[in-house]
Length: 269
Ligand SMILES: NC(=O)C1=CN([C@@H]2O[C@H](COP(=O)(O)OP(=O)(O)OC[C@H]3O[C@@H](n4cnc5c(N)ncnc54)[C@H](OP(=O)(O)O)[C@@H]3O)[C@@H](O)[C@H]2O)C=CC1
Ligand SMILES: O=C(O)C1=N[C@H](C(=O)O)C[C@H](O)C1
Image 1: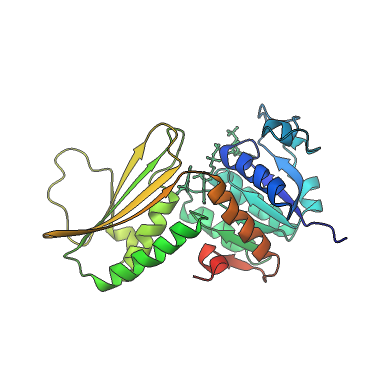
Image 2: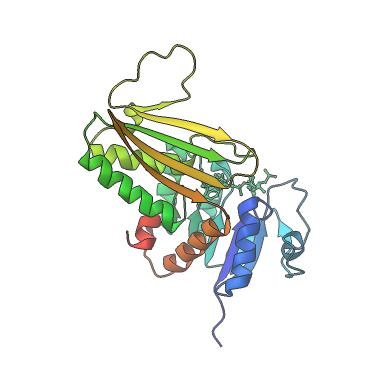
């Protein structure tokens, strides 16, 4: 029988790390060959399966990625921007398919992912779900059809532990809206209104972020004109959704040439 391709999970004890571990085991498409956490993490030395409530898997959580990368074909990485770019350099040396779900990336982080993509497949997206990627396409289409009399606002809600805002998904949606409208997203974006802000400036794209409880992820794109409004909405209720997308990307990436890809490429949207 053919051996399953090896996969490494970074941020293995995190919310997404655990969702990924459970799904890899349930799907049986990949073999987990490494579970990486940062230096000093309380998870180091524990069995990944025990940590996720799956029973022993024989995979010990470690802070040393190199031995695991040497046995793997793919890396799924939902950590922090600094960690993801560090992993990207190592994954590129090992020619791993690197699936990056981490959000909060600045241009400097994207530049480092671009460099890694000269040597290996790098698939990065602010949201790995089919639904959000479809919504992104729809947002672009609608923005193409409407002029600047339609104000664009993006409202997102997440759990209380989320550290970045606007969410990666919100930015994906806003960038798609800007593309559809033919404007520069970074010049058009407005976040965190507070106080006497003055009237809304025509042509801007507004972002609002709600943080609370255990909300998995909710996004509204609002097109508001005089007398009418269009609202596109996506609600995620289970992180397994993102894990499914990430593992689909990892499997897809095994057959690709080195380069930078996103979930639109994976899903053929
Ligand atoms: N693209 C998508 O579809 C999705 C993206 N995300 C994004 O994924 C990221 C993680 O989310 P989530 O799982 O909720 O966050 P968590 O904080 O639960 O998990 C992140 C994990 O990464 C660990 N980590 C941080 N730095 C390193 C490092 N240098 N080496 C190894 N491990 C490290 C953290 O450890 P410690 O806690 O000790 O710092 C933590 O265990 C966020 O950016 C989030 O926005 C989330 C869901 C879907
Ligand atoms: O941090 C999260 O939880 C999520 N992050 C991603 C984002 O920033 O959009 C995706 C999803 O919404 C959950």
